[in-house]
Image (cartoon, rainbow, N blue to C red; front, side, top):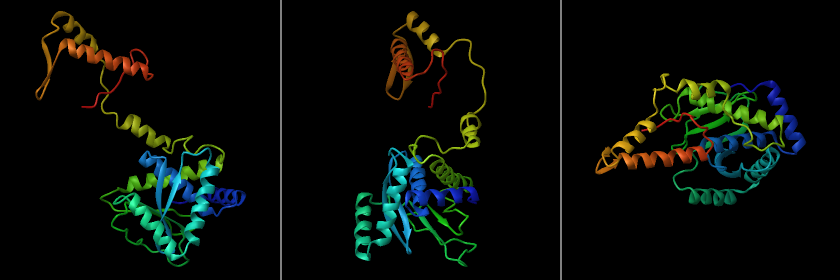
Length: 261
């Protein structure tokens, strides 16, 4: 995906003010994306440095983007400044921490050398789901296997990186998790496009029918699953507990909920 010129300029300007290299801001944004994708605030990112993939552990649950960008800058400095032996120690530690799980993703923050932009990106390592690299100054590329991610998913991930960079530059003192990364079109698809067909509400909700039958014949079996059965009384009690729990979590009276079976 193309990096807008205004965003690239904002990244360079903010990096100068923070005293870090621009690549540190990209690593901070990458960490935020990984945190969103994994629902884990602390992430272990694979970072491509001089042809090797090295570990960078970052906590995204910090007070501000500024803090995260500074930490990312320090991580990059440590990775680029460590000797071969130090790198191998860090790599071995990362693999001990997350055996078989790392590196699922790799970020190569440096822009590829002039003249090396090829039609086909370098192949992924066997244990890598996707790699973010920069074939040119104004491009972000998501390299992925079709069996793991389709093109639309890769484009969304690239877009999340641009959104995170934009949020970072717009308000570096805001918390990284203060705003979501999903755009309005994707949100509409998730909320409405995947909602299935619209159906009219029944005249009477299910819990009222269950309660009526529980009053009339409480010990009659209502539901059977495998070797477990529930009477109408038991089903009414379960329904009541679920309803109270939903209300306690903010569902308004008469609110509609989905049931996944």
